[in-house]
Length: 205
Image (cartoon, one colour):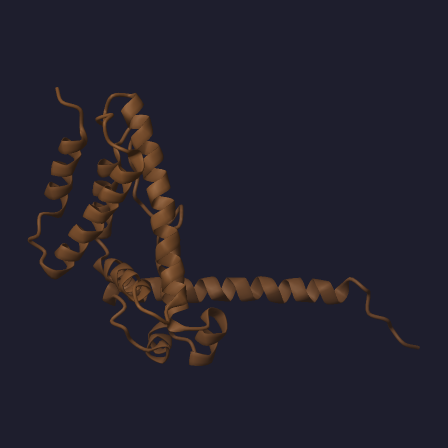
């Protein structure tokens, strides 16, 4: 007498294996975030990172494919809702939002270095993951900040003779450029410079 396997057994096993794979990938990613927060990217190899994370090179390649894909995943996960501790008031201006973000980022310079590495790679040929990451991030951030600018203009907190998208692009450029200066020289007045930009964008008293 033979015992037939229920038709639903195989899909159930597949779902279980998939769930375990997702959990394992998240476990590796969480550890990788800790490593990069401590030491930055340093353009090191995937094999070296695997050793520090505590997994095999094959496992890291299986879940992330390449070093660049891992770097993107680490940065995006580190800034995911619930993990990013940055908060701001509902009526905060775009510059105030970026000042608070910069203040938080300064506590984890390794991830700041990782972000700069990804943006630099995006400008070179042969880095599709980094380019897609940077292009998408800038586009989404410009749109979000431009919406905030428009709302603040309606409330009289930002001068109304400037284009919201242009202000958003300027704020991002200032924030990223000052972040790079701070990585090279910790005496660079990052927050103070952003505060000057904030004052310049406010209506005349």
